[in-house]
Every structure is written in structure tokens, then in C-alpha cells.
Amino acid sequence: MAQSATQSDTQSATQGGQEQQAGRPFRDRGARKLILVLILVMVVLGIGLYLFFNRNKVETDDAYVTGRKISIAAHVSGYVSRLLVDDNQFVHKGDLLVQIDGRDYLAQLHRAEAAVAQAEADMVSYNLSYAVAQKNYPGQLMAAQGALKEAKARLFRAQTDYVRQHRVERAATTQQNIDYARAALDEATASVLQAQGQLTQAEPVDANIGNAYAHYTQAQATLKSAQAELELARQNVDWMDIRAPRDGWVSQRTVEQGNFVQTGQEMFSIVARDVWIVANYKETQLAHMRPGQKAEIEVDAYPQLHLKGHVDTIQKGSGESFSAFPPENATGNFVKTVQRIPVKILIDSGLDDERPLSLGMSVEPTVHVDE
Image (cartoon, rainbow, N blue to C red; front, side):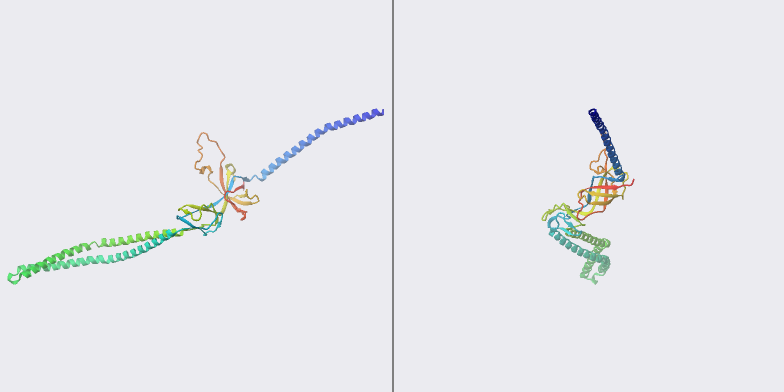
């Protein structure tokens, strides 16, 4: 009986253990489902919170740093006698950067100065001549008119003497007196002709004065031309020294001391301090973007540098619309693509002199828009 009871207890314990083991998988599966549901709820909640707190933020990674780049070119051609800057050197406005050998331009300057002096002397001379002509030519006309009258008077007297010599008795005169009267008449006639010729020469008073004035105005024009050449020569001499137009860093230097440079040849560029961000946002991101909205900017090169800024302007056209070969959407194989519009973002704060922004650096701006 005791043995039977023991076997019975053993069988009962075995059956209980089997029942306990059979119910454990159901409890484990239920716990795993609960954990998965909780995880899913947390993920959905996290996504919802992220979207809620970032619903007014528009960001893009298609953005870069840009700024003012000033090309420095030679105004005059010649050999570079002095090169006073090096790559990536910071220069201030007015600093001497390059000197060009200008001995030829100095010679041109001296020649232009001499030409101006000669033109000034000619103008003074012609001005005096014009002033004298205003007095001389009217005076010459009056003198010619008086000489003609005087010659006519002598002719009248000679004619009278000649007639008288022929009317008197032959015994009352001599052949010599007749010859003298004839000669005096011829001389008086010649004097009248000469006086008439002088009067004809003196009559165009206005024309002679105008000619003198024309020489004066021509001298004025010659002086102005010489002064223009002198000014150009002075500019050429000034352009021998190339100075910085503003503060900035020397970049893309392509000139060396001793090189021969041509007029207009670019030697290097100066990158100014002013920089800003150009962000190419998708057109679908611009619905609520307006100038003046705040922006946060992260720089790929400096992860710990956080910049603050604001939207300045939105470009009135996509990049493709300003390309050399814009797309022709009227064709039959048109495929619609989302365009990107450049947005200019100005930097308000956060710049660090120890970590300057170089043109072309990649950034990721985030604009806070108001829906």
C-alpha cells in the first residue's frame, strides 16, 4: 500500500510538472507580444513627437558657402617688377599688391606733359592773334579806304594838270612840263589801282577775324586732346601700382615676379570677409518660407560650430532656368522633376575667426518657417 501511494504521488508530481511546462510557452509568447506592442507604440510616439517638434523646420543638405570674390587684373601691360603678396595672405584695402615696370609709361607721361605745354603756348598765341585781328582788320579796311580816296585825289589833280598842259599855248609851256604831267597822271592812275587792290584785300574783315578765331578754337581743341593724353598717361603711371580694393584673402594666384602681364589679365582673386549661404531647397519646401525667417546652420567641416542666420532672399528662378541650355518642356518626352530654388541665407552670429568659412564649404541649414 505504501509503495502504491508513493507511485501515485510520483505520477501526480510528474503530471503537474508537465502541465506547468505546457503553460509556460503561452505565457512567454504573450510577454513577447506585449513587449513588441510597447516598442511599436514607443516608436510611433517618438516619430510623432519628432514630427510635431520639427513640423516648422525645413532643412536641406544641398547648400554651400559663397561670398564676394574680386578678380584682380592688370590695367597696363608690362613686366611684374615687384610681387608683394603670397597665396592665402590677408590684405587690407589700399595695400600695395603688385608693381609693374613702368619706365615706358613714365616716358609717355613726360611726352604728354610737353605736348600740353606746347598746346597751352599755342592757344595763348592764337588768342592774342585773335584779339589783334579784331583791331587790325577793321583798321586795315579803314586805311585802305583812306588810301583809295587819297589816290583818287592825286589822280584828279594829275588829270587836271595834264589837261591844263594841253590847253595852254604851246609857247606858254614846255615839252618837259607836258611829259611831267603825263607821268604824274600815269602814276596817279597806278596809285588808284593799287589802292583799290589794297581795299579789296582789306574788305573781308569778318572772314579774316573768323579765321583768326578758328585758329584759336583749333588750339583749344589741341590743348584738350593733349590734356586727355596727359590724363591717360598719368592713369597708366598710377596703374603701375596695383592695390587691394578691399580687405580679404589672396586666392588663386597665377602670377610670379618677372612675368609679363597683358592688360586685363587676371592675376589673382581677393575673397572678402562677407560670406553667406546658398541653399538649394526643393520647390515643394518653399510653401511657407519667407524672407526674414530664422535659420540654423551646421557646417560639415566644423561639427561643433553652430551658426545663426536668417533668410535674405529667394531667387526668382531655378538653376536650370539660368543655364546655357534650359530645358524645353514642350517636347513630347517631358518628365516632370522637382526643381531646386536657391535661397540666400545671411549669417547673423556664430562665426569664429579661428575657423573661417571657405567658399564652397558644404553646410546644412534649417529654416524655421511659420505655417
